[in-house]
Length: 435
Image (cartoon, rainbow, N blue to C red):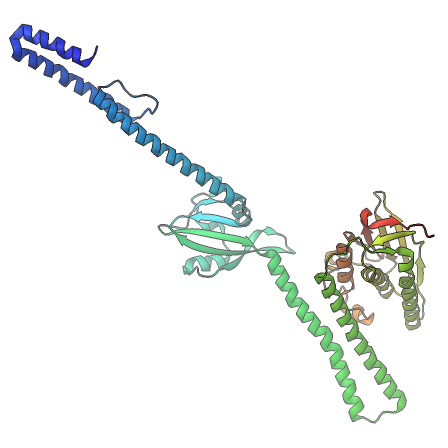
């Protein structure tokens, strides 16, 4: 029954009982009762709004509550949109290769992405609201955090990497909001390794050049200050020529490495006849073997297997350099009387393999991963005795990688070594028939 009907009824009852004054009093009493009911229903709805349904109230209250419902719906839409944006932002941070850690004003962990978790070993289910210094205990970071000066980044040790190559992280704190902190981290292991290699490279080049220069300087002073007979003079000049040749070889190898690193990858426009390419490689190897046998008095047993009648796509000079380096290394590091086998073979998957096997002293397993580093030598004195620059295998590695292949090394102490180059099938083709 509509409210107006209740008023009319109340007025009739009041009028029958007490005339006009009673009718007015009855109508007011009913209206007051309905106001109490409307307020109670409105209060209950406002305490727990149901945006789908409004309570049964008078028109005034219905309009009032409907306006509030529209405001609440708009606000709920804004909150949902903000939550979606936040979720998208956090999802983007999860995909970042850099680490992000949100800290409160006391330096406790509020949130982090997966990258930061792997960097610092953080598990949010376990470590949320734990102090960051309780997990990142590197002294450099503890001092950096306590100093409060976050203008520059600092480097700390990460949880990844290995004993041979520990992980290095660059971290920096940023203040935001009400004293909160954002901790950023990025993996700089490769950069640190490259910087260490650069320093080692400069030191090694300086050392390799300084040594023959010192020898040359001494010989020159001797020739200037001492009266020597013709035989002694010739001997000194021969030694000087050897040191000059050593420097020339070093510079040549450095230039080769620089050219390999700075030039485009060889394409498929040039096809090299493998038999023709191997002829000068074999001639050089036999000449070196003869020279070494004259020094040791015991000739090497050098064997070259059949060369397949195929062509390789690539740079002729680079391929010849790689083949000659491997054969030359085997001869230099195999004592006189030892055997060196040079073979070509077709692998089951169609790839072509060039291998050099020797009966030399072999190489310990801990040295194998570093053999292709520039200037790395297993035996410093032995390498210099053989005239090596320490760059040969680095050149070989660059050449085979530029041709899409791989360098394989197998060796054991007392059992000799086997170095092989494996070329992909797309760089090998049969020789075209000659007309």
